[in-house]
Amino acid sequence: MLAFIHGQVSEITEEFIVLEVADIGYKIFMGLSDLGSLEIGQRIKVHTEMVVREDDISLFGFLKVLDRTLFNRLRSVSGIGTRTASAILGLIDGRELIQVVIDENSAFLTQVPGIGKKTAARLIVELRDRFIKEYGEQYQAGLSPTTPTDPKFNEIRSALSNMGYNRREIDEILQQIDPELALEDMLKQAFRLMAR
Image (cartoon, rainbow, N blue to C red; front, side):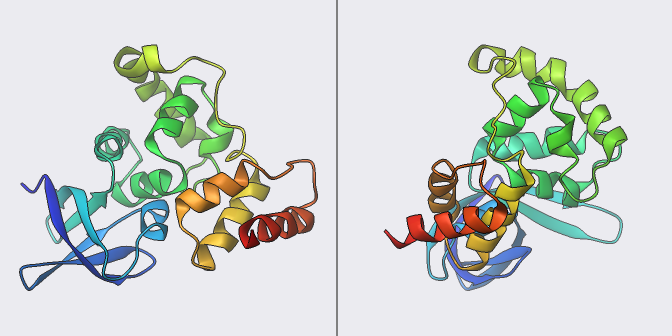
């Protein structure tokens, strides 16, 4: 199996990249956050997971090893497939996911398309103890990220991503926005901060 691939990004879509290595293009599915941080021509290392089904072989890629590990943990949960696992990690990074699960923050998880209350509850039940055992010393209950759980921030994240800003830039801006403002005013504040 392929653990990682070094190559040059030759194509970026809303679901995958094509990574060119020695005149071969690898189609690698990635989450939105990773996709938003990449540029055509950029040389990167992608940590990969090959998923083999009866009728399909797909490569899923991650810029961080932790995200690949969590992708496989998520896939072990009944009702969570590869696309849903990738969508979750496209919404928040791995460290935030661990914190959300430890905090039993099912409200956040239900914001991911395809995850309802029952699936969110099952995910927490099946992964929380494992996450506490594996990562417990690094994470404390009650410290879930506040910014991503507000749907208004997701709207802003999506708008800025569509304008070509990468995830790092967007995250820095989101930390500076006043969450008490109306969505329209929050967008205006985000654009002002981006213009600096």
